[in-house]
Length: 469
Image (cartoon, rainbow, N blue to C red):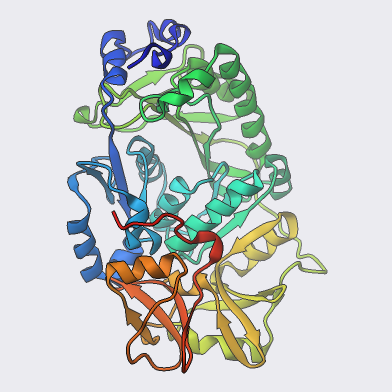
C-alpha cells in the first residue's frame, strides 16, 4: 500500500491499550489488500421461489455461512453485482458481514415473534432495514428514517426491492420523533461516524479522517441519540452501532448514554470462534462489541445494546384531519383482484397513488402520518386510469402480488436488456400487463400491445452500464 494509504498514526496511537487491538496484525491486514465480500439472502423471496434461489446459490461464488446471522454468506470473490438480475429482484442484499451482527442483538434482547414497533434511525442505504424487516414478525412495524433526501430515495429503492409490506420510509430530522413519545419498542441507531472501520474496503477514506472529525462525529452521535430517545418506550431496546474504531464514538458514547439516560447495558452471548471482542466502557462498565478485521472475517464495527428503564405508555389521539385517506370502495374493488386472495390489507390513497398496508397496523400508519413526512408506506399498488389499474413497480416486487399474474420468463441477456429499460422482444405473449421474471423472481412490468412491448422499468433505477459480467 502506498504511503498515501498508510493508516493515520493518530488513529493507531489512540487504539493502544484498547482490548483486542494488536497493532502489527491490524496494520498487516490493512496492507494486505484482502477484501471480504458477503451477501444476505431475502428469506421472503427464497420462500416465494425456492427453485430460483437454489439456482442463484449456484450462480454466486458462495464460500461459507456467516456464523452470527441465519441468512448471510461469504463469497469467494466479488462478482459484478450490477449484472445479476437477482440483485435487482431483491433476492439478496450485498452487505458487510460484521454489520449483520445486529441480528444477534435483536434475537438476544427481544421476542421477535410478537408485535414490535421498530425504528431504524439512520437507515440509508438500507442494509440494516432490509435485515430488520426479515427478522421481525408480519404484524410488526418497521419505520426506516433517513434525514438526507437523496439518501432516502436509495433507501426506498432497496426496501421496495426487498418486497415487505410492514415498512415505512420517512425523511425527517431525528428531533421530529420527539412527537412520538414512547412509541417504539426497538431503536436501531447505526450512527454516522468517522468511518475508520471501513478503511480496508475504502482506502480513499483514510485521507478524510482526522481526530477533529472523530470529535465532530461523537458530538453528532450524542445529538442524534438524544433526539430519538424520547420515542423509545419503557422497557424498549436501543441498539447503537458505528463503523468506527475510535473510543470517542464507541465506549465513550456508552458512558455518555448510561450517565444521561435511564438505561441498562445488555451483555450479549458470543461464540469464541467468532473473534468478536467484548469490551466495557471505562466509567459505567457498559458492554460493547468490537470487530477487528485481523480477528473477524469482516470490517471494523462496534455495537452495544441497552434496555430503557423510564418512559410511560404511548397515548394516541386521532387527528381530526388524517393525512392519509382510505381508498373508496370502487378504488379498493379495482385493486383487490391483483392481490393474493385473503390478503389482510387496507387500501389507502396518497395523492394519486393507491397503497396497501397491513390492516393490523392501521393505527400505527395514521399515527406516523400525523407526525412525520412519509415518503413510502407499505406496497404502492399503482394508480387508476378510469377503472383500470396502472400497476406500480413496487407491486411487482412485493410478496403481495397474486401468484397467478400473467408472467413472462426471460433469460439473463434479455433480463439485463429489460433492466436497462430497452426494448424487449417477447414471443406469443398475450396483450395487456405482464410480469417480467428471471429465475422465478419478478423484475417488473411490461405492457404488451399488438405491435410492440412497452417497458415499465423505473427510469431512475435502470442499469446504465453495458455488458453482462
